[in-house]
Length: 170
Image (cartoon, rainbow, N blue to C red; front, side, top):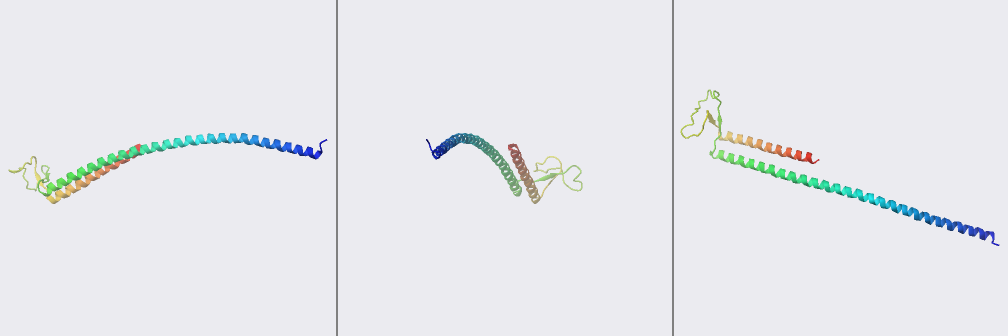
């Protein structure tokens, strides 16, 4: 006959063995579920990461294209400004050397008290109404004012182009 203590010990061992094996089976099942969830999570992270990388590449390409367009626009406006400055400098030089003289055309009847003749004289090539030559210093100031106006208009056009390019890209 089996003693009750041994019976109890056997039962206890049987309970512990079955609990341990149940624990192992549950651990194995939950381990598989966790591994599967981790794999799905990693796949989701890869999809999100690839989408983010594609968006970054797209944004960088758009930014590069915008920078190139702005660079071309900047070069164009710089050339316009440089050409305008060169033309203004030539005009100032021609005025300074008396190679060119600025004159104003009087409207009929406005030269009332002025004793200017409509005749250009023997050596002149002026056609039309009465003209008065401007003092070279005044002509230089007028050229300076028009130069500043030209620079302002070119700068305004450059700013408008920049704003238009920026607003189109967004």
